[in-house]
Amino acid sequence: MPRASAVLKIILVGILGAMLLVSLLSSQDINARALDLTLSTSFVQGGFTELAIPPLGTIRAKTHHFPLRFRVSLKDINLDRLKTLVSQEPESIFPEIEASFRSQILFFVLRLLFLSLLGGFVLGYILFRKPSQALLAGLAGLLAFAILIGGAALTFNENAFQEPEFTGVVEAAPWLLGVAEEALIAVDSLDEKLKVIASNLTLMFESLSLVGAENAVIDGELKILHVSDVHNNPLGISLAFQMADAFRADLIIDTGDATDYGTPIEGEMVSKISQNRLPWIFVPGNHDSPAVIEELKEVENVTVLEAGLVYLEEFDLTIAGIGDPAAVKTEMRVPSKEEYKEAASRLMEIIQQSEKKPAIIISHNGAVVEEFTHMPVTLLHGHSHRVNIRTLDQAAIIDAGTTGGAGIRGLMTRDEIPYTMVLLHLHRLEDNWQVIAADIITFNQQNTGFILERKRLANPGTLETEDMEESPEE
Image (tube, rainbow, N blue to C red):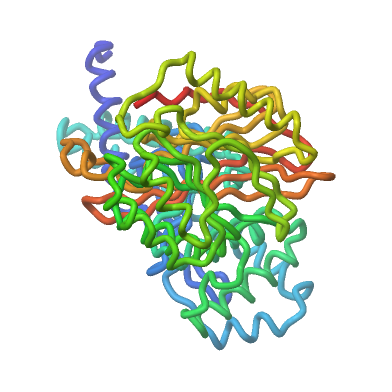
């Protein structure tokens, strides 16, 4: 009878062998009528399920709790078969497709289990040279993978794709997230799913230049791009233009720190935002001097909110905001908590005296907007240089991070500071607007990578509270 330590060693070897062989040979090609797909699994980024559509990008979501990553990759598409598929009645082909998927996925799982058994057995035999010990190692690998796959299946949550992450080509993001949102979640019947997916794929491959141009990412009636802390970086403004165009934003809200030191020459660079004709609502930050503010007031499409409200008749939208107390002078400083409370009180008085109630309240520092969490509004701020999305009391609080990568200071730090912004999706609820989802858009400077991650904040008519850590102050 082997000792306990020897048995444990055999089990660990079996699990290791199973992991190695599954990682190397897990890929399996399957066919879904017009689509040729590849299924695979790995231990990298466990808990995620990914949908890869080369060369456009990858959608993924945290779907389960066990350390396996499942990946579905589009290998090839046959347009002739796709056109034939779309022209047929879904009722006649769906039982066939469902049966085919079930059998192929079942075969994929059985194949993984066989590989885990074989991997454990082979490594066990190489190390121990005894068939009995090799068989025990193989069974250990098989049992480990059976637990992993079973646990992943039991904890699998397809609704996780309501908050997906996207990596890939910028222009493809709206379309790909539209597929995840509309084709895989919002459409109830399988027949309708097939029609939507097939139709979208046909359009995509026949006219790639139009990918993402007209497809809504989510069923929101108003889209706002939230930028902040550009810090005199022209690239940040350029990225904001590109994102606003790619995602069809209706307006842009900037929560301050357009410049680094508030000099007039910096204000001239910031005036380049006039190249984009979208409404640009700006609230001054602690790095924005009176000279910069005056420069921005001269830009035709910019509205500067130093203290007050602006009503956008085109959208029937009211925005309230107040500048950072430090913006009234040229010195660069972070005001005290008392000054921020005074600013919040001043803005509260203005709101109470106004006939129109705001749907959005903005300020540069989160300490100001946090005084309005008792109101059913969306609160936007910046300053921390870190994206943060949370709900508190009745309000949604959103920090866009730094759209300019913290400017010159960002280039001088050892740790990379990404360029970030947030795309807000709002739904009309009774007589005001409510944010229902937020897309975090991130550009990394070193590898020029693009990442988009969705956060759902509420369904129309409700506001869900979730605990998230607060952003640290600059």
